[in-house]
Structure formats: C-alpha cells, structure tokens
Image 1 (spheres, helix red, strand yellow):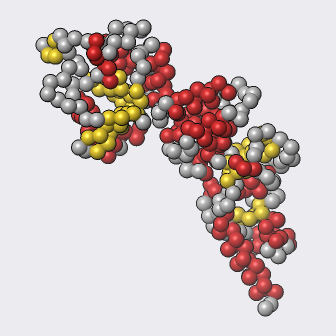
Image 2 (tube, rainbow, N blue to C red):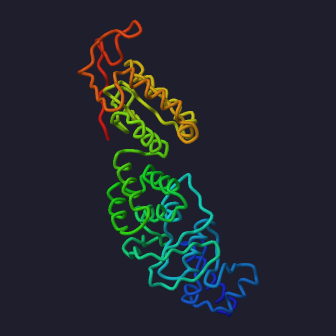
Image 3 (cartoon, rainbow, N blue to C red):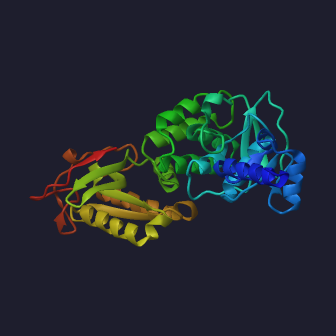
Length: 344
C-alpha cells in the first residue's frame, strides 16, 4: 500500500473511532491509532479535520453539544467528567440550557484551563459516581443534581434544577438523599435537605414548590400531593387536595397550554366538579408574580369547606349537613360514590 493509501486507511480508522464520541478524538487517541502530529496538521490544513484545542481534534461529524462536552473533558484532562447541570442535560434533562460546560475533577488534580468550561475541584469526586461506558464521562444524575444545586447562582436556581430533574425521573429520592448526605459543609446543606423532603413528599414542579411554601406561610391545613384517582377514564393524578374540605388545586405550567394536556385537565376538573368539590386552577407564573389573589381564593374555598382558620383542623365527620346557599353543604354526598383514589 502506498503512503497515500496508508494515510487514507488511518484517516478511516480515526473517523470510525470518533463516531462513538460525536466526531471528537484527543491527540492521545490519535497517536494510539498511529497518526502523528504532522499528519494531524496536514489533515487540518486540508480542511478535513479541525483542531479545537491543544488536546482535541474534530475528525468527523456529530452532535455539536455532545462534541463540546468531549472537548471539555479532553482539554481539562483526566480524570475530568462533566458534572452539575451539564451532566443533567447529558442524562436527558429537558427545558434547561447552559452556556458553559461544568466539569468536575478531584481536589488533588491539576486541571488545564479551557475557554467556555467551568472547572470544579471537589473533595466529593468519586470514580464510582462517574458513568463509564458509551458516551462522554459524566457524573450520575443524583450526584450531578446535588452539585448543580451547590454551584447554582441562587437558591431559586438550585431548587429549580433539582425539582426539574426529579420531575423528569432522572433519579429517585433515595439516590438524591444518599448524595446530599455526603455534603458536610456548605451554605446550601439545609436547602438540600429541604429539597429532599419536597421530592419525597411528591412535589414535581417548581410551581408546586412555590405553592407549598405559600401554603405553609398562610398556615393552611396539611394537604395531600400527587393523589391518584381510579376512574372509568383511567388513572387521574391531582396536584394538591384537601380531602377533608373538598378542595382541589391544580398548578398549570406552560405545558398545560398543549391541546392534549388541556383535554386531560378538563377531564380531571369535570370528575371532581361532579362530586361538588371546589377546583382552583393557578398558573405557575402567577405564583411568582402575583400569588396573593389566588391564595386568597384557596383560603376562601377551604373556609367554605369548613376550615376555621390557622390552628383549626376540622374534619368531615365533625361538620354538619346544614344547607349553604340553598344546597347541601360542600362535602355532603347523596347517593354518590366517589372514585377510589390513593396517594403516591
């Protein structure tokens, strides 16, 4: 085989190897394939390859975001792994973007600087937490969520990232608790514990987190979250309910504007409305911008259902069946059986 034929063969092997890493290879990997630095320069001058840094070469096509993750790992150096919000996105987190790549290395490492990459030296780096195998080296979702919360700019951003990842089932509450327990000294240690309580309690969206906080501020009676009802139309999940006071609250995020979701919301509301229960719908954005009018409505519904205010915990069995506004009091049933439901 001629020299030109041998170079073509090495180029082909490089492209085949890079297909597993979004078209990216490190210089170390290219040298292992028998490709010299002079050949790398020649391929770059010919426009076939692109040098992305001191350690990284793009030899093929691939997803640009994933290629940027590989570049970050190669440029920072072993044993770097993408972490925090970057690792969550790599694990499948939707609705979140980040203009920098977050990379974690052990405290004893000597990482190289790289443009567009934020390097975090951490004592909590554990090789067992790095996802090996196919794909870019990255921290496991539960570990990444804890680190994302610690590295977030604000407590609200930290809360959003953890709850969004939990909502999208990237990790279990128990996995999150195990990773959060490893944090010994940090100003957000208490926040991590509170987030675990929220996740384990069934809060699955940022709006629900805001709503739970506002309920606590107003000293509303204890509520049930994410309750499931078995109906003839299938299982229906409700955000928040006060069964003893016949009140349901649904927090509507932007996904509720989808036509399919809208139809499901109407079905859920009709089921409880036919039972005579009060349904309060609250746009999630309102909980951030102007929550008081909606919280006033929730309080009015609870009081109408028999709640006497903070410190009171009146149950259905303690209420009489006097008539209100010319009809049986809310919560009184006549020849009606409510669909079975269970809390999850």
